[in-house]
Image (cartoon, rainbow, N blue to C red; front, side, top):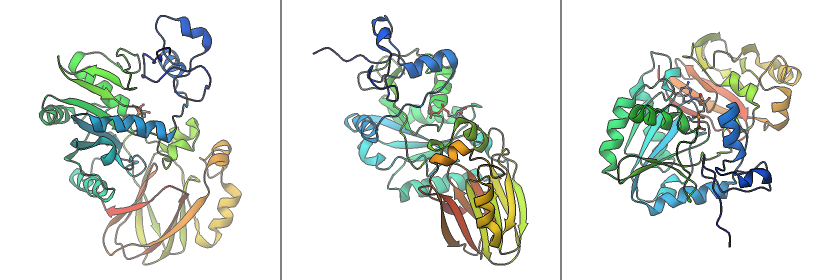
Length: 367
Ligand code: GDP
């Protein structure tokens, strides 16, 4: 049997049959001395990300290999998509290895955010998901914030063992690893430009010292992530790029806010109060009366209520409604992948409409 070829960029097994699957190369490229898959090729030459999907089983199989190792697991999550970027069953997949959690994109939080509260919430939510983590650290992979501490912690906790970096797509895992490499070697954007060989396990292997390695595992696709339903153009609008500027809406009951056409907030019952919305500065928020909200949505989604663009709308699961009673304290309603709304006084009834599959959650207000 011929030995399988692997992409020198991402380590995926090379195939020539299906362009939409990982490891695709055109047959003509098979004779090249260095084979990189079309996705890595594009990424390298055009800085363009191609949508290639592993099946869910592929991921589980690949990540499950970590359970046979003696290592430290570093799980990267996006603090704006914490629930959406969670990998269910990670504890089982990674065996008895200790896990630390890295909350990335902290540069986007307003300065007044209480980081300790965020860390506490992340630990608690991880535990609710059945994941025991040793600790949580906040970083900005892009702005290189928080790395002194994270580097020290990884070094101290790995005890000379290997390190496996895991995470869902789009959480900033590559940016995080590139930042670690840049700090230790001065090499920029090492992962996307394929400095490191893929391994037969499908992981990219980066030497830490003479005996141990850091492994980049493939980004797991979590179907609940909103990012999988939206076009790149829409993603640019809903993804915050700069520190979020909160928007305040003083609402009476029976008023509605639309977050583009991706989410809807109905103030059903309670005393007038000022709700604070933390979303991408580009995402338009519209206020209407609750009684007109259904009609307003039907009429304007994909147009005035954009994003979603008409293309995104075709594949976006329909909005589903969930009604919640907010306790009598300052509470955040978190919409994974979009942002959150702070209810200042609590004691109100709110209905949230989000695409089916996106799970909202509540937490004590961070600000
Ligand atoms: P991966 O799929 O997990 O490897 O994610 P990438 O490293 O490709 O990053 C996904 C997106 O998040 C890109 O648009 C990055 O520019 C962005 N990103 C990554 N890290 C940060 C960060 O610390 N702050 C901000 N604001 N954006 C980030």
